[in-house]
Amino acid sequence: MRIQGKTWKFGDHINTDLILPGPVMLLPFDEQPKYAFQANRQG
Amino acid sequence: MGQTMVEKILARAAGRETVTPGDIVTVDVGTAVVIDQNFMHNRMREPKQVFDPDKIVIMLDHIAPADSPMRASMHKAARRFADKHGITRFHDVNNGLGICHQLVADFGYALPGTLLACVDSHTCSAGAFNCAARGIGHPEMSYVCATGQTWFPVCETIRYTLTGTLPPVLNGKDIILHIGNEYGEHAMHNVEFIGDGVAGMSMNARRTLATMCAEISAEFAVFEADQKCIDHVRSRNPDAEFEPQFADPDATYAAERTIDLSVLEPLVAYPGTVVENARPVKDADQHHLDQAFIGSCANGTLDDFEIAAKVVDGHKIAKGTRFIVTPGSQAIFLEAMRRGYVQTLMEAGAVVTNSTCGACCGYSNGILAPDEKCVTASTRNFKGRMGSPEADIYLASPATVAASAIRGSLTDPREFL
Image 1 (cartoon, rainbow over the protein chains, first blue to last red):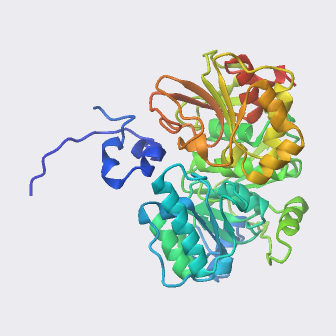
Image 2 (cartoon, chains in turn green, cyan):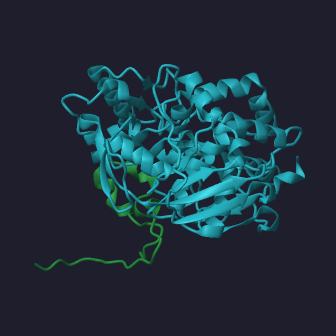
Image 3 (cartoon, rainbow over the protein chains, first blue to last red):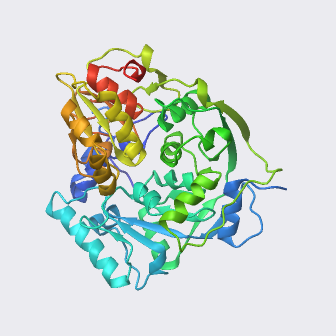
């Protein structure tokens, strides 16, 4: 199987707020993915 | 071979004589704390019946009162769950409102020598009461509600002996920033606190320190139970049965460290983490601060209101700095009003909010905009924690936050006391 998409490589010390900011947890599930790693991803 | 406090509590909860680091143990949960977050997006996979309604407490705290139909539905689901399963210890918006770890302390739900579980990462707060307490995942809490059991790996323990007297202007927050600076993270380790220095600390100060052990990634953080601790629990939960656990004299530790509280000074953690990231407030950069916040499960206590009111008494908050104070519970709010702390803070220019997790987790009552800087006496300074990921969060004690609110920049509180 081949999957095409974007990847990000992160360093150490990835915390829970970087993975998914707290307030984003309040959003509906289908709106949450675009905020994952928003503070430290490359675009 | 002797056991540490945490090992003894885990052994008792597992029905075993002993446990050893490296074991994985299935344990009975003495108190299961369910919060509003459990009911978000139908996360709670509801059991047909709960293991024991008298061992479950429900608290609406992260967003209370509700601020949207979704959050209102979450609260409604919690009320229905409590009613259906006969859970009487239910802290609603109109009945004993407060932040879960504050209520666990104030109602004596954390029992010495027992195990407590909750989905929130700062559950280790209850360690101030010799209670092994830890955050667990949402699906696991559904399992706990059904069976009364969960599991933990047994980790090695680091023991801190606290000596001397903490200067009155300092707080448990300054102690954890010192520990984070000197010894770094404590991942896959328990932490225990003993010593004469503990005796001089209020239960609130102990709880701030226990709560903040989440920030150094400790597994469990437990204090030895002295008479002050036992009196606190007995006065609030007189019918509860418990047996404090003490470390054996020949217990084995990964490290044993001593901290003289009397020589500590006010510290501030720079944005991102408390691990190896703090410096003395007197040496901090003099950036303009857009916001100063006191609150959360770590610093929403009456002690915190008292010291903040003392610092700002007769002063005005700096122009261009918002000063927001959030009590740990409705009861603390009321008592802070009776004692005049709320009036002093508001006359200085502070906004005092309802009790909720609020600004600490970026949910309400003080969200940060891009490029803003905030000094906070709350739990966590991760990027994006309090709003915009482009905002900077500095973490310090309530006294430091109050002094910084007056000056509008990071300020050593000893200037005002």
